[in-house]
Image: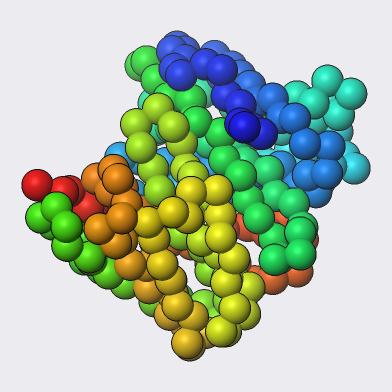
Length: 114
Length: 114
């Protein structure tokens, strides 16, 4: 049961253009949605988050949009830079009896071409 | 310098052997997590712990065991019952109740079964 889905395994974008990474979810109880960036052989690092009660959060070149009715969120990177090339994971957190649980999508590999 | 230390970085195991992966954090975080990453499958939750001496099974706990005797330590044992143990293992921590539940990850441990 994949509660968080990233349907595009990879995305290629020209430097300076916009990168749009998409994510869908099924659980209406998620409290927060987060994006992490990961380089090979390293742990993921936190990029940006959004509360389930918001529809947009912006931090520099990164903006996350949340559409609750469609259970869809997206990460926009503008302008894209070669250093942005990495795997991006969409994640969602929910509080249950055991504490906070974070579920990850399968990831999207972004290639930014110079 | 606060962070999460995972060891060993690389580990080889013969079939039928148990192996323990270490995870230590000096961030004073309450909650700790273990994830497994396989190609194309993102990060899957193995076990998590919100407080000392308590832990919960994640989505793929079979064949694994954990302990949480100290706040800063959350070792993971991969037992011989785990059918496909070859993977990249990631430990993470967070401060419980910290809004978005942002996880801080270690650098990972790559386990290969020969």
